[in-house]
Amino acid sequence: MDPRLRIARRKAATRLLRRVGPRVLRWLASSWRADVLGAEHLAAASAGGGGHFMALWHGRMIVALPHHAERGWQVLVSPSEDGDISEHLLESFGYGVLRGSTSRTGARALRAMRRTLERGDVLVVTPDGPRGPRHSMNLGLAWLARATGGAIVPCGFVCDRAWRAKSWDRFTVPKRGARLALVYGEPVRVPRDADEAALTAATELLRERMLAAERRGFEHLGVEADW
Image (tube, rainbow, N blue to C red):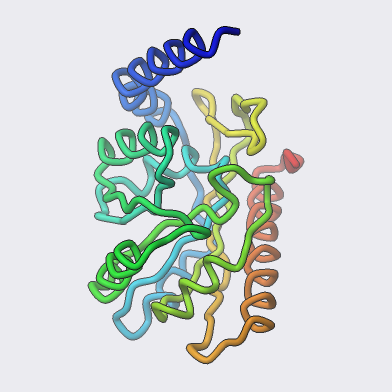
């Protein structure tokens, strides 16, 4: 395909998604039924008055987005064209947006994260985004947790019926009438003096707890995991 045609089609799709995406998502979400598991871990993460991170897989962003709307949460969004689409959708549901990534976050973004956590707010991160591979993560989020002092809540957001994209993250959009399981796992904390070995261990622990949260959610719904 001609590169110019590809760019034109992408821009047209972006404009369409920005225009109708929020309305379509609200219509779908009005029929969803969500069960929340592990809510006590959210309280544990904010014990002491500070904010914390919420870690979820990139492909699950839509599943819990309406449930957490209008809470003033901040979301770390990649500085890419896909991030532009995500930013518009998130802001339409009352989220704040910080542009950056766990692998390429500059000093300005880090200062913004510190302010967010110092206010006692929540910062949502997708550690396998924006390009994957699925369920992979580098040491970036553990590094951010060490630098800011915020605990990380591993999240598993799943549903019993959905449209799933053929993308690397199997991007999930629950269908009308879907049942959702929103699972929060035990927080992962990274000491201020953590060395690289400790960051690696924290990253692997977080990954295990995120996958465990999803497994618990699928078991609660009585369906097989989609990975």
